[in-house]
Length: 420
Image 1 (cartoon, helix red, strand yellow):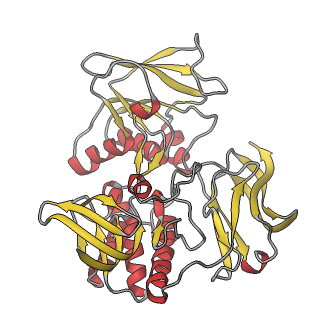
Image 2 (image 1 turned 60 degrees about the vertical axis):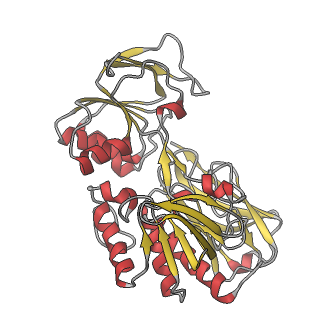
Image 3 (image 1 turned 180 degrees about the horizontal axis):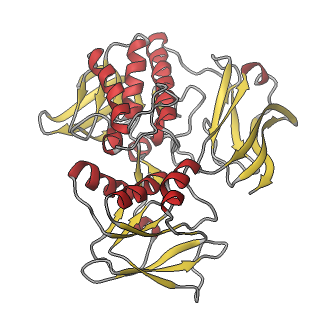
């Protein structure tokens, strides 16, 4: 069995950033495992710009952003294995993987960073009834067909869901000469960033149907049309509200799911709200020596924040290895209150090693003139004022470490403001 100080599972933005950060923090024996035939993950098919504004203060494409970290990995000579699929992992930090060159690989690590990313919700996840002809695909698949394989997967497109990748692909479909007939969104608001709604949908006069869903897919060999229905308060189609839109492609952009099968296999606790691991402020999971970051932990809005979080994970993993740091003592539970979605981290040490602890979450709705509050034991321990928030954007709230010493058993995060 090969012995490595730190193994990073996943070679996307999170994995590369964590590996580089750990190396620079003093752990030189690092190995990245990546199942694709290249580093960079999904960024390699993102040819649009808007990446890197926070992390590098440059307006980059996804490909260019990935190249920045890939160059760091190469410069530091951090080893990585491509075409390598992890098939098993246990709580003793022992990994079994396979690849075509070496066959079966067994590795034992002092620490592991989980950076496997996420996957898209498919038609099966959404239980959409109807026929199963060609022309049904996810936004990420459409993006890969266009930007990696080089062909147009459809000419008359309906998009289900308003996630960011779907909005960006709507614009690209139009620029490639296709017609985007409609964007259909089950919620009363978009799930993507406001800038993407403006630049990709409104600027191209693409119709958007809110509080609606695809209730049936029609067509034998290939999609010929979809039925659109209004939904009730439980997001179920309302009979009698159906209308038909002709199309040859249904593209699904209905959210992302963290890739946590390996995490669960190692017996690591999973949070119901994020579908990622439960972590403390140092991004360590319920299993000692396992750290999680990026979209496998919780789905982010910007890759810049994925990289920043992953760099933190690399620092903490390096400290765990070099300092043989164990349990840091009593923890405080973090729970979401009114208006706030699932919060990360879910646990905070009462005496953290850093001066302040950052919490990240999404609002449950659109709000204007917002006050974000952290309360514990009947006292407000941190606040933040925002002009407006949407579910497509993450909120970051920092709590000073000295406020945690007097905190109760839990901290509740809530939002106060007028719903838009």
